[in-house]
Length: 205
Image (cartoon, rainbow, N blue to C red):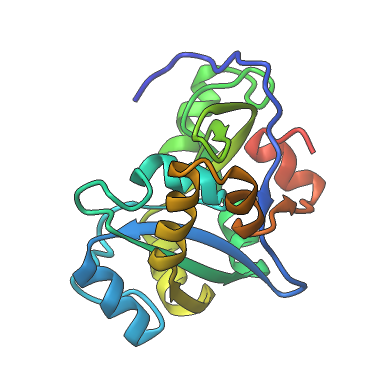
């Protein structure tokens, strides 16, 4: 695990598509996992609960990570609606993947928090529709252990395979129809966080 402090001065804000009761995150999987999840309304085998699974509220960061659903093992993009209390449970128990002096008193306290946490937080440059890095950062939430079990059993409200939408937007981008691509994107806005959660994950607001 890297020990370097994250010193980038870019804005950390949780942006997502959300309603009064749910927040949408994205994951990309191979066909067999994606189709089984859609049928069941949650993740079932061949999904492996023993592994850490990363959920991402940023649609375009997911497109960057999956190559618009073209990378091996990431050919299907799923839109997953979670309950607000589920996400808040995860953030209450989260630890940053990297030491940050603005969040942790020292590296020893960060290591102790990290070793006891079932949730990891990473902040990576968010992406434009052309997948260029933006000045703001997008959050990734890594779930393991108890967090994965709760994710699968309690938090998921709905799973939708949005791969066709992904391909349509990518097609518009490839043809230079940027305005059309942007219009088709999910509407993401700042997700309100309690002050204690904001401080724990190093968010700016």
